[in-house]
Length: 296
Image (cartoon, rainbow, N blue to C red; front, side, top):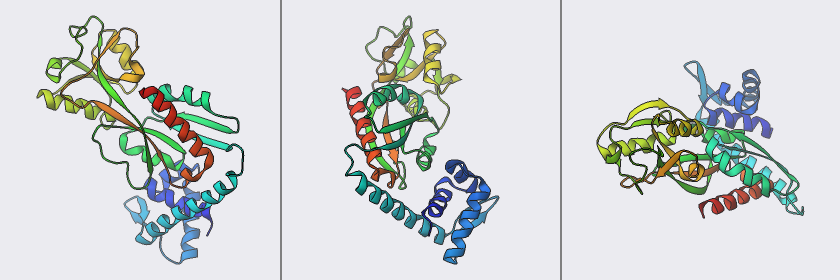
């Protein structure tokens, strides 16, 4: 069996359909369907089935997709066995991160990389449930989840980087600006600038609301923390902002929260086969080192 066809079948399963798999693999939906059809002829069993207007893997398709991961891991181990004889690993490694992590990590990471490894950086800020799917087209995916959130799923390998506290950002002339820290009850009646539902920080704001016993008054939904910080500094509301990324932002005071575990976990997600590549391992090691310096 052609490993490329197996990779296509895996993507149909992990991405949830032909169209999404085509986007992840940079193919047309027709090409994806044709490749799956070739595999079906080779195996003699149905690998996909219709569900509404889309398709999903049959039990046979899921079994073959699971076996395809073992094939991909074996191929990468074979390549790594040869790479081990190089003085330095070589290759291109694609790395994505959500915007604030990209600002925090990418400049330091690029400064540290040796000759021979080329890093392609991209900013990818998606809903929490969609981060794992990015690993079908990106080698290392920097993702975030709130404290206490569940795992990323069984299809990806997870490498923890750091925990970043989320503080309450207020303007410097705000009534709470001189306090060392705040409690959820202190924030009753405030106008909030929050991210859209489904993104990690929204879960933390929900915990603040539960602790205070009142629903937050959300006046703006802004996913870009830089825009949120500018609005806070201008007096148009308060927000939850990551401490390492915005601790020195002009016009703001970041106040730690008590009574609520307010923070986000920053992890690197990758597929098991990509984890075998020497260049990917080297970049992951450097990301860990950068995160350790930031946390310190």
